Image (cartoon, rainbow, N blue to C red):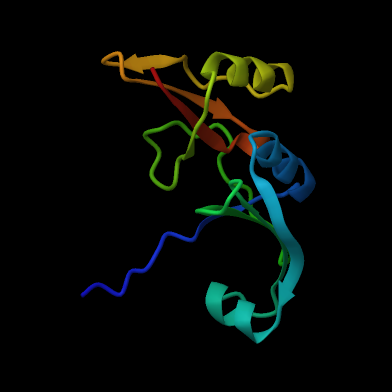
Length: 145
């Protein structure tokens, strides 16, 4: 028997917590909570003594796998590669299924978040696009055809 129970959340470290939270809320996620975390627990888990972070937890309406946005107060955050492409090692994107993919892409473009490439269609079943969100974070948006 596996000890795995569920997929709870994906953690994303950001510099601008408010902008990132607004972006994901704009996709339809709901803020579950916002708080500062510090002390022995955080030091132990992340392996950074004396750390302090502010987090925002967002989940889809009705629950499910969440996005935990974290912005470190100390130590200072270390910039990643905001222009990383899909072949760069590491976590490259999180994917959300949406309705009316073209409308979502257009709305995000109007907010300054452009496509990484284009909108692709797989065997008349699935449409997908990568959008580069705040701080270069890539969000995949997918829709059943």
